Image (cartoon, rainbow, N blue to C red; front, side):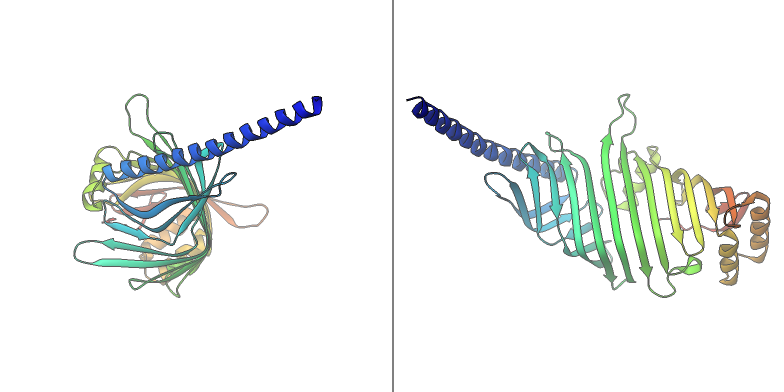
Length: 340
């Protein structure tokens, strides 16, 4: 009799557990679907056009898998992205953290009214993670591409071994100040077409940065949105910038904004190797005048220190972007074009 009662109790427990798992799977899938739809609605309110076939859910009852097909996003600035099918998974106990996979062809188009520019990006591997808040806002997002090739009729081909970008979290100031969005990224083994790298060469071993965008960029095309962002106090705070590009070995930190002529303006504290070789190449290519090259060499001699281990000259100097000019220390080297 006791065994009979135990069997009945165990059967009832398994039945209740199965019902609980089934109910929780449907609750989690519904919560995720509502979160995605709230996110989409918020982006539409901000001026984005977002279309996709989905979400389609699978993995019942122990895995929460989601997929989308024919995804397309158009920003208020006229930038359109069309990508391959997207598949993802979320844990049942955390349905708002979604791990995504989207390898294949990604097509970018930018409509400027009088012309349409296009680029095709082919990624052998493409992964990402999106963390949604309960209200549909994106708390953070990450994408990681491997073996990447960019082709465009408007530019020469570019290839990368890996490209990683992370956005968020978005911090809202308690005192009503400008919002802050963390942005980090890294590119490895960047290869440009022959001659496109200028004085630094066509191969970049590494470029990485850790930064914060101060102030949300308003809706609209860049011609109107960027001036409003600038006028509201928008700027880019760079906590860390690393570059290994040809002779250049650079570490830097500083701030960057836009001046009234829409030219980059800011100040960076830098630690640099390879400055002498870069100056020689710029002078040889006619990018800087002989007088500026001589002044830059004198600045390297005055501000540089010899590294005891390698014997290379390490230059500790401020780099300033001001009034449309690029300064190394006190020496203006070349002009800076507007971003628009």
